[in-house]
Length: 633
Image (cartoon, rainbow, N blue to C red):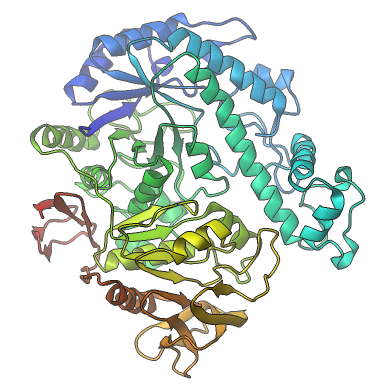
């Protein structure tokens, strides 16, 4: 499939006499896909039942007549004001019991069945009208599930729904009391209607209670998405997508993606550097205009897994954004680099957000491809350059990577529920491993915990998978490549209890976690050799060979040729040593990447990217700042 470009457009924001010129300029710029409609509910249905489709009919026709393909979004992320009057209890409630009020977006609770049916209705009406429209070539459900901390809601609707969910899961209250360990602190319940939501408790709530509520909340996102997918599929054969976000992990994206043909995500490298990467001040300063060298790539690989190979960037940052603590302009060339980086990781399309910068409302300082006066913004030239390169260059041919890294949303909730130390998170642990693999020049696939076939992978990493389900445990035991577990892999059962035998309980690997501790950030433990343990360490027992140890001789990594266990969170130097050790066991060649340089292999070529502000010598030649190179294998 030939890679393509697109943009996000809001015809309802602009006078209709501008549409045809906009569409012509989009086509001239080399764009193919235009996403519209996802925030348009108040214009489509200003008062209940009074549908106003004609303007959207004309907008789709104008875009289609210019040779553009429409991605039509359902408008359910922004229910109109009258919806609150109709369903006053539909708003989400935060952990402190405060309602998430009308006045911006995403002001609904996934558990509210009345709003779910309203969403079904508007989706059905939209699908009936546009499902056979030749210009509507793809769909998007809602917009950015989970953004602004809107997955978990402590509403009355959530309380009712959670009780029903628990009754289905456990069958009787005695089973729940046993699974949660409610004998502790006399927390036993007499019936499911006794159970409240796990907020506003005197001290921390039962972690099993919290974990089940996180699972329930995720299931509500899945159910909400499915009603829209069902309505669209009843009237359209076009592929359906959803645009996920960076480091939004509070629902299971794999389960949402099971209903969709394409996964997309919204890539904002500079905003995410300040807002979600978690880097120190020196790193943020060094990459302030480029973004972290690995954060976007991590999500490219994650959403390729969510989409089962099919994925896009639905929103690519083209200039300064408006929502991060600081909002610099990208280094010249970075918009081109970000686009090619997505294609190197298998993206089918990259769409820039947005076409024209809005002169009003919350995002008026969010840059687009055009300025508010319709003149080209700086990113336009880079988008046009990529369009010309796509026309002249061979298409990217994806291939399976030699390394698989497991990412498990349930484990992320478990770490969040019980981090055991300030600043410790599952996402952070997995991302640290991903960065180390990339610093070693390795190409990585991220895979779900339900992945059933690891054939072809030489190295498989499962850091921090708190509940190691029997199915995954069995598949990994049969893997041909080297498997590395830990830390905290297998540390809890499905009910959030410590299992016996003690973890990790891996057949053929005599390692036991006897005790664990979290460390102050100013008290690292030096390794024997370069690197240190940072934040978390386990006391390991067993007869498996010691592969890495502390200066004091305490084992940190134990195992052999086929599998190993790491019982600590290692700093960057320690992880670099660990990855080198694992690669040697797996028979993989590594290459130490210069600072800010990253590479990715496809079936036919090798891409090189320079995320720094200086020219750097690489095997693909000298890369200029924000430079990209393609080299045949």
